[in-house]
Amino acid sequence: MCHSARGHVFRVWAPRPERVDVLLGDRRLPMERTAGGWWTREAESADAGTDYAFSLDGGPPRADPRSAFQPAGVFGPSRLVDHGSFVWSDQGWRGVPLPGAVLYECHIGTFSAPGTFTGAIEHLPHLADLGVDVLEIMPVAEFPGDRGWGYDPVNLFAPHHAYGGPDELKRLVDAAHAHGIAVILDVVYNHFGPAGNYLPEFGPYLTSKYQTNWGDAVNFDGQDSGEVRRFVIANALMWLRDYHFDGLRIDAVHAISDASATHILAELTAEVQALAAHLRRTLIVIAENAVIEPKLVMSPDAGGYGLDACWADYWHHALHAALTGERTGYYRDYGSLAVLASALSQAWVHDSGDSARASQRAGLVGSQFVVCTQNHDQVGNRAAGERSPALMSDGRLRVAATLLLTSPFAPMIFQGEEWGATSPFPYFTDHADPELADAVREGRRAEFADFGWEPDAIPDPQSVSTFELAKLDWTQPGKDSHADLLAWYRKLLKLRATYPDLTEPRIDRTAAACDEAAGWLTVRRGSLLIAANVGQSGWTCDLDQNSALLAASDPRVRLASDVVLLPPDTAAILLAPVSDPGKFSALSHESYP
Image (cartoon, rainbow, N blue to C red; front, side, top):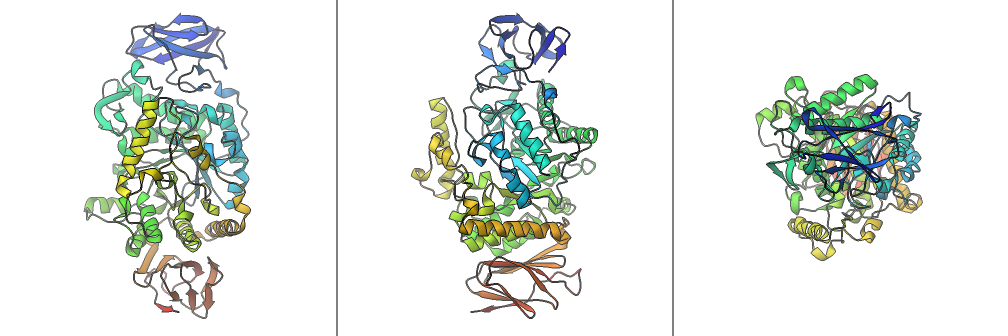
């Protein structure tokens, strides 16, 4: 908030209109134009909790582009918030470094029964007991309606009204820190939502120079783009400073176009690093990109943008296709164990032979890649939003978890994955405009055509029941097979925290081998060996002497002398030092009935 001796000073960047008024109840107060397209007005009696709006050239009320809260949604007035009034209890918190950390992705609206920030606090002890280090929250910036994934943000500075107010979000972050859990927020800077977005009336926030799936791109390099860049960077810093978030995950950066001398991602990351130095705590920036682009995580000195990590969807595709047998859509180039072995040892697959890119990748480490067996995209972008338990056996769920949580990368668990949640996670929206709602329905059908899914199998995104189906059932973790799978996840995370070899991020310290015909796969992680059998027959894996079985996904897995016996769809983690620690090679094997 910007205070003066007599009240609050309203400021807004609006170079396009000739007149701007601030609306306070029945009062219409003309604002004064200042340099650079900014307008200001001091107003007595305006303070935290005051509702207001702007009027451009005498037009209808418009929310403040930097509104801190929209209690009535994107079409309602803005509300002043005093961020300095919240009492924090995390003064000693210094954050969590990404190397070695385990992430957990959640959607506030479906993570708890109430679907609120306060409701999420109830389940933090579960995450702490599981062994989670970082909670990654899907977007919470104000979007149209009461329910949605959050990837159509309109008011970037305002927590979504249906989840609770700014103080409720702060309490969630504060409580997470009390449990030793860092919190990362998913943010969207490649477009603005389609409903309630009046930013173009204020100024050139968008440009037709570039096009995205959502229309005109955000203006990061055109006329007056300097203020747009400052707008986005101010938003990023606000979440980290005022809400104590520990990092940001930036959505779909491949849809951000910027030909400036310094790319917006590089500038934003540098500003975050400067804030981290001032706050003396770890702050993380992660990107989602359509492909693994080394430049994102390379240091600025090497010509990169300096981000901490990027999502590696290739890793997911390789694992998913190998364990489910799916080969349609973007899974058509995956499925073999050889491709999976490549992903397990370096994150990317299908090397194109580009020597320059290969050279760039040579300096990368595993913790710069966030990998998963499930996430909101890979589950929700299926026709019915089916999770992995609907697509593979319980044994293969355990194999998938084993390969994920023993990898050299930054592993991420999707909400409920750890107990095999059966609730789907379909795409859902709450658009008031019937034409927009129909456009979303048709868009989903067109998107799924490449997978061969029947249109009738796609739940209506607009239906409240579609949203309700996605809510986690928190009675499941205590039931039979769900409890058993949860125990396996806990064991894997305990092993990861115990053995340094499992958090070693250097990719050249990992080696994977496989036999396509027999169906076995091994991953060497220093003194540890991860063995998995997804073949049709049992497999005997030969070991060096003095090996020990640390964990097995199935009680039928047996260590006998210098071999371990793995039935189909099982995995084992063994302490199996090699005589030459620098030598990683495929181990001998044989099938058994």
